[in-house]
Length: 220
Image 1 (cartoon, helix red, strand yellow):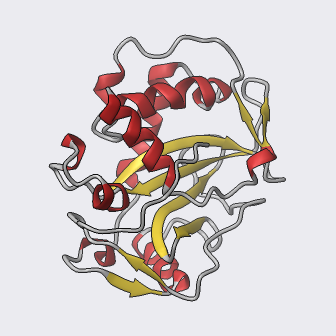
Image 2 (cartoon, rainbow, N blue to C red):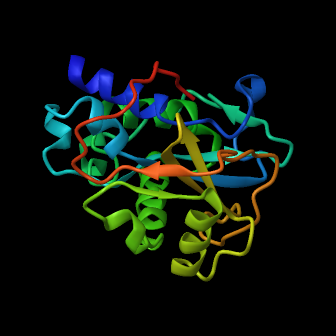
């Protein structure tokens, strides 16, 4: 259980959260402007915790969350006490950590207006629909500008308009990719009220990395 908890915390720590820390506020169910799909680049975690069981498969992107978001940068949280799915483990294919899944539903999922299983099934649909370009499949670290990474992501996902895909980084390394979707949960839309990586260039660690800069846990 200790490993699972550390995984959830470290995955969260690998993000430069797009919205300000004080942007979260208790919200009303279904009242938000768009969805933010956050895909964590798991080699960041596995470079620090290489012996963790979750890293044996050398995962690439995993779903950190599908978050209701507002155009002004704020986002609703903990909108109801609705119970989560009876079996969280059925969603380990998109996020290999029960602790993270159990965190996402009460904090973010309850604000969507969807039932718990419908929420995670939407996460799964969006995750598999998002295409990953070749730059993320290299066996060695690759250094690129955030703009170049963004361009490759746009080319791999041509239905996403300009400004609908963001790159997040920390310590000059890629931590996550974020995609904005309309309230139907499937239609790409322009991101609003969010920031993105401002580094001139960043490194994409390959799957199976064994070294990285350690980062303090931060959780959205």
